[in-house]
Image (cartoon, rainbow, N blue to C red; front, top):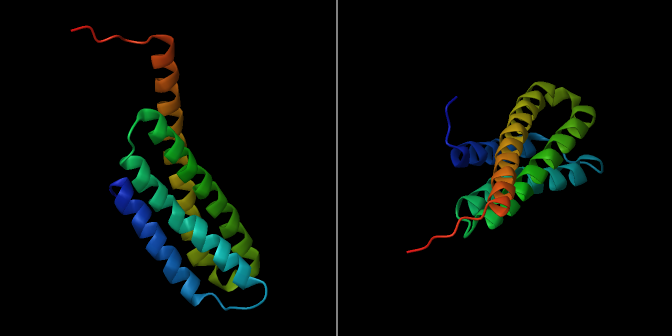
Length: 128
């Protein structure tokens, strides 16, 4: 699949909403659903904010937040594997996508952080 990252994170958020709609609600699943849906939909929201960042430092911060939300989402999906074993196939698909998003966001974060560190070592002055 060849998606723009905004489209991809939006699709992941929508898929997560659909998944939460089919999860049987009970004393165990209710808190998992609440935690999961917050982190899963926050990935795209934070990436969208990063895409509109006002500076490289702001971009790095917001990408870092999106990356942390993706990691948290992976955690909640692993909990769902135990809590809702009958939805294992759906959970594994979501988990695969969440892990891919983690890798992508981590790569963007590291690259941005390295670029910022390099700029701080070698500041360029624009003399006109």
